[in-house]
Image (cartoon, rainbow, N blue to C red):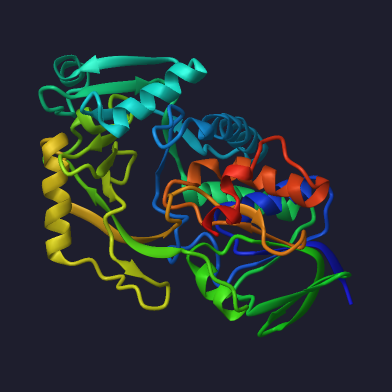
Length: 377
C-alpha cells in the first residue's frame, strides 16, 4: 500500500498552502477535503480578503505577514494569476482605542511606512469615507486585498504540479498514530502517512471530539455583505481611490470595509456572530441582517449602501485569546494548523511554509510557541 510523507486534512487556505509548500520540497503528499475547494461552506472564501501589515492584534504577527507578502507574490509569479491588489489600508478609531493604538505600535516597532490622518484630512483625501470628529486613521501603504478563491486554486494547482495527490469530496473520519506513523480512515479507504497536518477549520472541534480530545474552541457565524453604490459607477468607492478600512465602532467592535473590485462594496462586522457549527449553521441571511449591514456601512461610507448584491455566511473558529494554533497534538505525528479566529487568511502562504518546515525539519524560521496548545491548559 502506498505510503505518504504527509497527509493533510482540510484544503482551505492553510491546507492548500501546506500542500503547496510540502510538494515544492519534494514530499509525497496527499490532501483531503470533505468538499471541493475552494468552496463557501467554511472560512476560506469571500471574493476579497484584507491583507495588512500594521497589525493591531499583536506585533508578533508582523514578521509572519511580511513573509506572507513575499510568498503571495511568488505564487502570483508561479501561477500567472493576479492574487493581491494594493489599495492602502486605514485603521480608524479613537486615539487610545485598541485598533488605532495597536496598529500604531506595530507600525512604529517594525518601521512600517504609514501616515496618521485626523478625521478632516482623512475625509478630504478619501471622499468615500466619513470618519467621525475626534477619530484618527492610520494609513499603511502596502495594505490591500487578496482574492481568496484564486489564492486557493493557485496553491492547489501548484501542489498538484509538484506531485501532490488531492482527494476532494473525501472527508477524513478519524486517524490513529503509532511509533511507525499515522493511519487515516475515510469512507473511501485507508491511508498511511508519516505525519498528518490537520487544517480543518470549523470542522476541527468535531474531529477532536471523535478522538476524545477537546480544546476551548468556538465556531462563530459571521456575515459578509456586498452592496452596489447608490450611484452606479461612482469612482469614490473603487479600489484605485479607496483603501480597505477597519473601523472601531462606539461599542468597541471592529467593522471592515473593502472597496468595489467588480463585485460591489464589501463590509462585515468582526466577531459579532452567534455560536454555531458547520452542520447546524443557518446559511440564510435575513432582511433584518441586511438592513443592519447597510446601516453600519452608511455610517462610514455614505452612499455606498445601495442595492444589495450578495450576502454570505462565513465561519470563524475562535480560540479564547483569538490567537492561532500551530502545534503538535501528540508527540510529533499530528500537527494542528487551525483555527485562526477570523483573521488568518492573509497569513496562509506563510503558515503553509511554517507547517512544511515543522513537519520536514522539526523546526521553523519563526517561533510558534505563542500559538501552542499548552496555553489553554
